[in-house]
Length: 191
Image 1 (cartoon, rainbow, N blue to C red):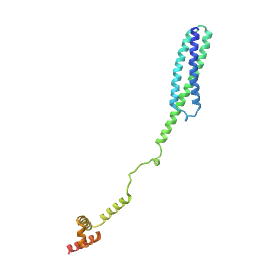
Image 2: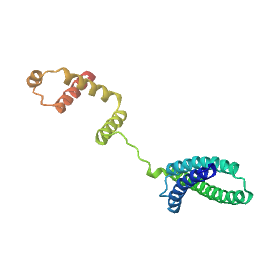
Image 3: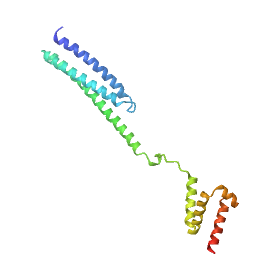
Image 4: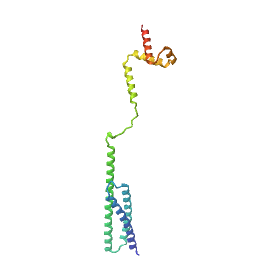
């Protein structure tokens, strides 16, 4: 087997591998854009580029080894046709990758531009009843005259310091009686 035949056999192996990758790529490109993975396409494109470079090196070696002009023309036409197929498949891969990226970007934009009505916030628990009672007491305190506030403060102070025994001795039963007692004290002080 001479050098020319060896180079043709080598080229045949490279073309066979490249044809398999191109067929696999064609089947992926025939599927819908949504079903296509851009990483897989990039990987196939990388393999095709490498195999194309290997094939171009062998084609150059074959061109150097050919001495007959008619054989050279035939080999050159065949290698150019194959090169055109590679260029077309590479263009289709790049075009599909752009479509996938555009689709991914539009999905991201839709997520980012989602209306505020769908936004969820986790708020702390509030005790509405306790808050309402606090606000009501606050309003009542602001509405009462200062004298009543003093009497109420004294009552609360006295309730806190007066022991249960003292309450029993005085005959008082609860806060209502304490308030009556304080009001009575206030009346005696005013006289």
